[in-house]
Length: 285
Length: 285
Image 1: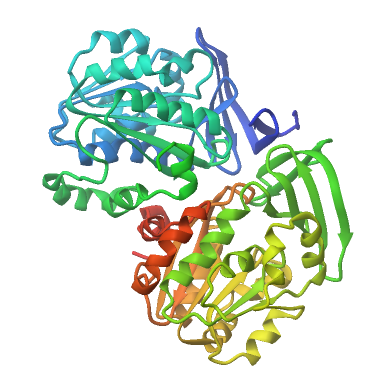
Image 2: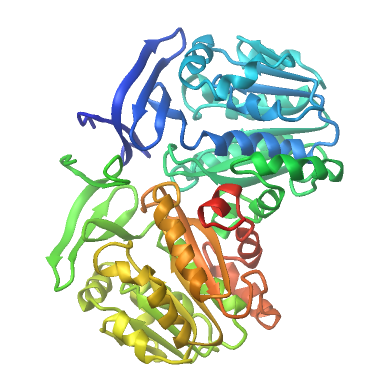
């Protein structure tokens, strides 16, 4: 569907659509890997698209970036090394650098152009990339993860949808590589799509995670710019359950969470009490 | 925006839009009160619109109808009489009739045509209306509520958005009338919009409820067909907090909730642990 003055994303087999009124088309390029666009919109401010799919907006980026970082951080016991696969906008890194006990954050983003475009248009998101603990590695996540062994306490798979070159990030083979790259009580976080719109896909993702991890749970947080907004995230863990917060971290989080826009530990614990619909969709009865 | 073959709703000052691909326009009429349309859509099945605003769809109606009924029911101690203002589609009634201890359910819907159209196109929603405990009253909710005194244990305000004739359902004057119509430990439930899209409106609604009720809390549940999906609901109560479930009801709910599509008591209790964003938007710090 093409409507002058609007950026419209169709999804769910092109039966459902979301539109954003456009003030300006700020950027358009074809990188080696994908089409990159940035729009300035009335409703959500600046909006990054990869291959026509909404990725990041000024208005709601804090939700995604806070939940995939602070949830695993608060469950982890020792958290020295973090790996982010994808996430070239830098938003997840910005959240992890708030924790002073983390020693190293590796960002493996296959497309350097996403990082460079984000530095121009989303400077708040990329503000953490200059932290001395951060390494930005312009590499293929699949190859990188196969080399890493028992190294990371947390791995965040900050991917696009399970189509084209990102589809491999939702397979049990990939999850096995992530498992091997994690320390003995490591945690994987990933975005796991909208079950209202992709029931089969969501069930498949959770099935694959359960083939590899002994603890697989899920929660939801709204992503206003994503198809159907009701977004699910996976928490896959070797040892600790997602509501088993590290008591040693509660004091510091108590003061940090006053400056966060979404996350707090009470919400964290409530978020894993799922509706019947959500449990059914991820095959958790 | 007009696109052939699509039903598109614009909102947030016409800067954001949601579109549904249409298979058939099943019904269109202008009642005394509003324009009533029913579409058959690819993505969400049958879809009811009032004055061009999405109200009910086959795909997600269970979410709204279960949460506004079972939450207050599980908190209430004695629940003999329930009042629903609006809600001519019947979905809220269908949920309340599942509780055998409720003696009377009054549905006050100003527009009889909404009820009649729903009976044709949403027969599952209206299935509860034939229950002998249900009275369907085609009246103005504002006038009705002024006459009721200390009569209802639960009042659900199942309204459209705070514009035009429904705007009065979001004022402190109306909430005072609801308060007077409730029994001494009564509970009011209402839909309170999407704070991503109407920050000022949401703050105003919660401010008005707090002028009247000693306990005002909020939760969220996704409404796929509503603008921006992330929907908030208000729980306003004279005596009991929303997480203070009636222990006498837990046993029966335990078996009932196996047949519900969304609600369960663990989700109920987790849903009131709010994100910082949600707390900020409703003025709860």
